[in-house]
Amino acid sequence: MKKILVAYFSASGTTARAARILADAVGADIYEIKPAAAYTKADLNWLNKKSRSSIEMNDPASRPALQDKNADVAEYDTILVGFPIWWYTAPMIIYTFLESYDFAGKTIALFATSGGSGFGKTAQTIAKCCPGAAIKGEILLNGRLDPAALKEWVNRL
Image (cartoon, helix red, strand yellow):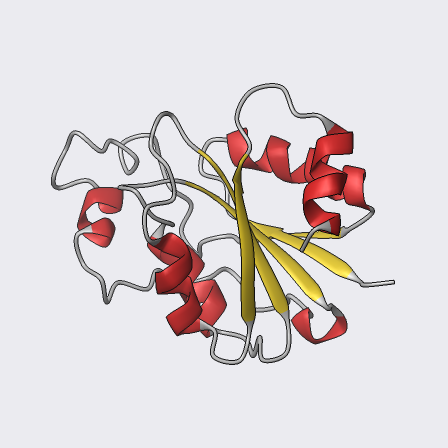
C-alpha cells in the first residue's frame, strides 16, 4: 500500500479545507506549507500591482521563504500538493517547497482551488522543479467534495 502525504498551501483557508477532506478521504498524512511571513489581506490583493502576491507572481524567480522545512517527504510514495491558483499557476511558495526537497522516485499529483481559472501549464512547470518525480494528475477541488471521488482519483495515480 502506498504511503501518501497531502502537502498544501492555503492563503485564505479554502485550500486548507479541501486538503483536510482529501487527506481524510484517502487516509493520508497532512503537512501545511507555511510562508515565513503570513500573507495579509492586502498582500493578496491581485488588483494592486504592488501587493506582495502580485510582485511575487510577476517574478518567475521569486521564492518566498518557508516557515520550516520539516516535511518528511522521504517517507512517502505519493505527495498530493495543493494550492490556490494564482495567475493561472501555483503560488511561488509552492516552487520554494518543491525545490527544498528531493522528490526523485516519488509520484506527485496536484490539487487546487480556484475562483475561476484552471491549472494552465502548472504541471509542466512543476515537473522542471522535481527532477526524477512522476507528475501524474491534477484536479480542481472547488465546491462540495465527494470523498469517494477523491479516493478514486488517488487510486488512479
